[in-house]
Amino acid sequence: MSKETVFKNLDELYNNKKARNFFNHLVRSYFPSEKVEPVFVKASKDFNCVITRMRLSSVNQVLDGFDNQGLKDELFSYIHNMLKAEVEPNEKLKEFIGDKQIAVQGEKTTTYMSAGVYMLFESWLMSKMNSGDKHIGWLLKDYKKENLVKKKKTNKKTDTKDTGKPKKESYGGRATFALGDLQSLKELKNKLNKGNK
Image (cartoon, rainbow, N blue to C red; front, side, top):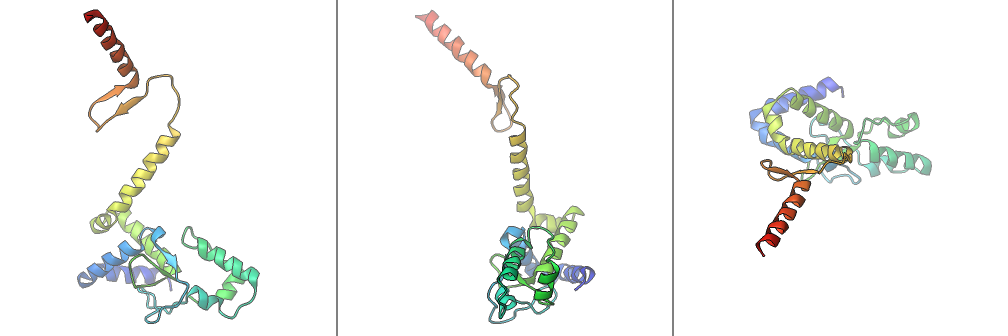
């Protein structure tokens, strides 16, 4: 299915006020990608993509009846990495998979998506969030906070240069002091205590 068709289906689902709770459920279940896993065993009923209604295949269905261990290893490697980046299978793997759509499932949901449709869903969400959509921003607020915290942690690791100056510390964002100041205050207190004796 084409990118335009998937985006059109997502826009229709998003703009349908009666389906808004279901849309919210999909976003919370499938985003971020750490919540999404490939489906290894076929579901007993309704094993179709929730966005496109395409028939899906589990990993075991793709592997069923195939004995080439090298190709199986390549398939597992591809499945392991297919959601982390835009990884394309090689020609042998494409021939092996054929037109089967590998299913993925999010956290705390009974719905399924095709791996390709999921990648488009994630791209659609990011474009909506970047365009300033308030509802999508509200749904992804925890994700944005989590990413900001990760960015700050990585920045702190790279900014640890020893300049020879006392390290500044801040508590609660209001008052700050240098650790060097604390030592001079202790020395002053000791001096005053000795003078009073």
